[in-house]
Amino acid sequence: MIKKLIRRILGKKDVSSSSASQKKSPREIHYKQHQINQGHISKNAMKVTHTLQAGGYDAFIVGGAVRDLILGIVPKDFDVATNATPEQVQALFRKSRLIGRRFQIVHVTFYGGHKPEIIEVSTFRAMINNESEHINESGRILSDNIWGTQSEDATRRDFTINAMYYNPSNQVVLDYHGGMKDIKENLIRMIGNPTQRFREDPIRMLRAVRFAAKTGFNIEKHTLEPIAELAPLIHDVPSARLFDEILKLLMSGHAWASLEALRHVGLGQGLLPMIDAIMQQDGENSFAKIALNRTDERVQLGKSISPGFLFATLLWHEVYLGWQNEMNTGKPQIPSLHDAIDQVLANQREVFAIQRRFETDMREIWSLQPRFEKRVGKMPHRLLESPRFRAGYDFLCLRNLADEVPSLLTDWWEKFQMSAPQEKEQLMISAKEETQLNPSSTLGKSRRRRRRGPKQQEMNNFSDDSQQAL
Ligand code: ATP
Ligand code: MG
Image (cartoon, rainbow, N blue to C red; front, top):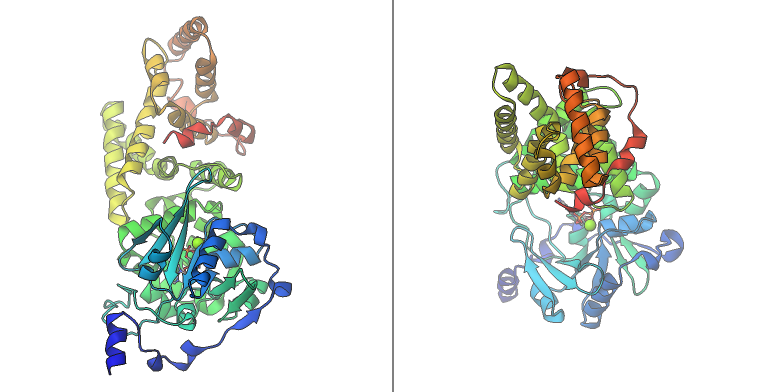
């Protein structure tokens, strides 16, 4: 009785009440089979597991990092799982911070590299019962801070390939749910009953799609089956979490494949108005496809991506159509654009809100677009001095690749940036003559000049700093 009370106070679940499946013993996988290269493991992640172990606790690298290591991919971040409570973890690391409410973890920060590295340390968690007060009416988990055994912790993870524990000290992987077999068979398989697990946390549907696109694996039949029907539950997820997950998906280096997979499993509808729109636009040089392919290339080359720029490209189709519609009512160009932007952002907020700072970036990039048409007087100089010039110019180049503005315009700006003051004057004079000869040039009707295939070569014009600038 007293023992039970202490466990309750400590937030521990009574292990004696665990089901047999939760006490499942793991398969031990040794180096010969998993061949994890320790050179791919962050020194800091090793430090964390060693320090915890030296403190008398169990500690393992866990989750996506183990999956990636087995696949021979260098993980981009490391999670550590331990039987130490968050307070016990904090006592061992000076630079550590308790974060999260629904899902408490400790962030241990290491300085010294070119940027600080955060190792996320989580305490083994117990499974949550359906009757529990931690679940809402649709089955979604609201809080998840009940500590449990390693076996329970494995059972509450999402996919079998994400539920393996690697101990760097003896190089053994503990596999509770056949993750190794699924890796060999290229399968994303939900642990437990897929319908129930997707109801507990609908974000898992997006995760399944992201991992499928990233690894090229298939979503296992029973895991895939309920997704189309449960898709609307995604709207129950708090907006900020949905935003984070969509951003991860778009910045995974496999954005286009992910969007195709979303549509394939029935998740595309209504998530971002643009996903539906993009998928309906056919042709190799649709604006969004060019933009996403370029994003994928950058991620794969290890270059930075600005979320503001990315979302600006994804919602541009909507903005552009709205802008044209407003202008067709006789409204001037600039107010038309601003009204269209307001409308698109308001619609987007109903689905999930894009963080304010990214919205600001998007607004700025979009608002610069008509300013690129003004190639006389003081305007070009002012535009060049704008802190968002690079981003706006890169965006213009994308529009050019999608045949939305003529090369004449992007070429002109390319030269204008590079040239000396006198040449700049000359360029403005020729732009003026050009406009007099053909007043509807630049952004006028002549922009709908269809081309076959994306202008790959011209992609090289894109700057790296437009991404960093935001
Ligand atoms: P990546 O870091 O490549 O995006 P990951 O699998 O490491 O992939 P994280 O979000 O870092 O994803 O989560 C770490 C681990 O935590 C996962 O591998 C999984 O075991 C568990 N996990 C994360 N999110 C969930 C979830 N929504 N439901 C169940 N388990 C989860
Ligand atoms: Mg991870």
